[in-house]
Length: 315
Image 1 (cartoon, rainbow, N blue to C red):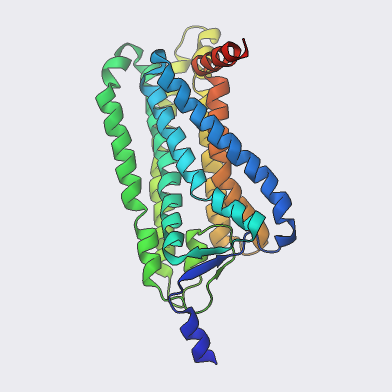
Image 2 (cartoon, rainbow, N blue to C red):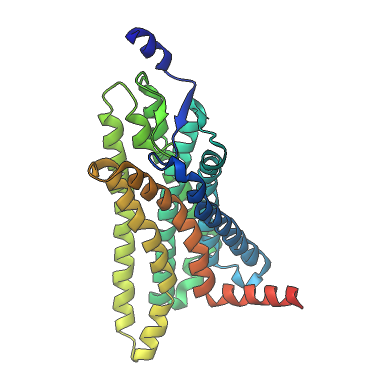
């Protein structure tokens, strides 16, 4: 019997996602805020893309980076939430072996791509505040395109070991993933093999890529704050710092849940499983929801253009 069970689960054709273990009875009610947040994320990010495309005055470096961030948010949320909602609504828990690893790749690739774009936006703020007269000559369309390409290549390559390593392990214990999507550590824990390589790579990726991005952002803001404190008046300092508020809010929306989720997944053994899954799920949903709201409300040009579109349609 033991050998038969092991054979049935060796390299399964499908995995079973449980959703939020322990809260299955509340799945429908949990789905309501997640569905609303997904709708806001899609509407908000498409609105950013639409406004920037329609308004020639917004065809500049910062807005190109915002469009990259919007596309990244759309891909990241769409790669997880539709399947998650199908679990909550229709109990559609099966996901194919290949689809699971594809989802894993997209999650890591695009969540880290968001981090890279925030570094690009920090560089944009640094140039705008510390070298305003050279802004247009430093951040040309060619430079913006190269920065965007480097972000895509870096994260596209560094996310590959997650599914490639996970595919190497034999899965003979069970095919049930106690999660709402194919998060890396939850999948590889099902393997009946020594998965330390996968675990170590995940920690290396977290602290090297995200750590490096945080370091560059910190350096940028150190130089920005030094330039701001050199301004002659308090009003000038506050006005200049105000141009950074949106970016700082976007940074908080991404990094705080990211680090908390990653650490609880690996080390939070005393944290209830359903709470760990909820934290990891919220981490994927919150940034795509907050980024268009933050930049839509805080960026005068986008807010003004959106107001014009709404009032024009209203009349």
